[in-house]
Length: 213
Image (cartoon, rainbow, N blue to C red; front, side, top):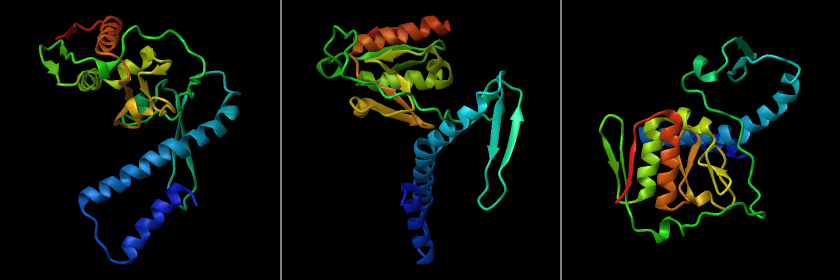
């Protein structure tokens, strides 16, 4: 039995027993459902569809409207970006898994655990983001700028995208969820985080002031 089937079975059991869930509990169940669909169902669907779509020689967006026990509906859009069609769309193609047996260039800094410095970032509107832990500042700045802007830059650390939809086998514990299936990698020193934020600011032409204090 799949994880999704087990989840539905648990929900049906609760309903059959007449147990009412709180709003928070229902939200947690729906969140679990969405995560399973995104991480286990959609990648498989993408893998099956891609060979068929390779016959098409122009960019397009296909919108699949699925309703249980109803015929599948597929619509075509000439827009080039899924977010132009659906504002809450989530990318379904998982990032490739990284083989950590081969080692690329390593940071010259020991990492965030060894560093007791604080990261302070002044945003373009003058708002200052500063937490006791550099990783929390790093995450909030990226969320404030927007995943849709930072992700396309393709920035990586330890060969892993700093914004990924795949939990890494080695550094997964240092990947923090920020919603819609996205994970931010914080396995880096405060100095490295500053460098990455400086790169983001330069690439996006943002007036960020990034300081280590």
